Length: 72
Image 1 (cartoon, rainbow, N blue to C red):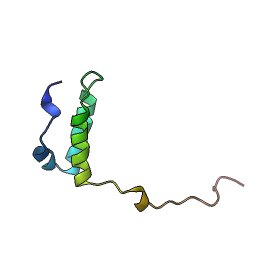
Image 2 (image 1 turned 90 degrees about the horizontal axis):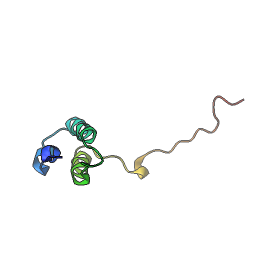
Image 3 (image 1 turned 45 degrees about the vertical axis):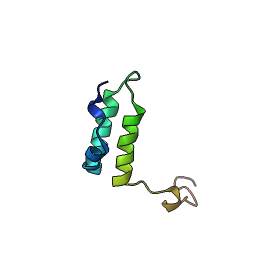
């Protein structure tokens, strides 16, 4: 695969979170098992994490229903 999807960190940081998600999806769909480049994917994921970080598990509320509504 050529370096079409290997953008610089500066180029990636100029993209919005939505643009990064779309570009990552395009890059993943264009890559094959032979052309997969983990460094390219990692660069997209790192840039996306900076723009729109995922919450850590400790920040997510854990709620379990006390009783399922479909049980008698």
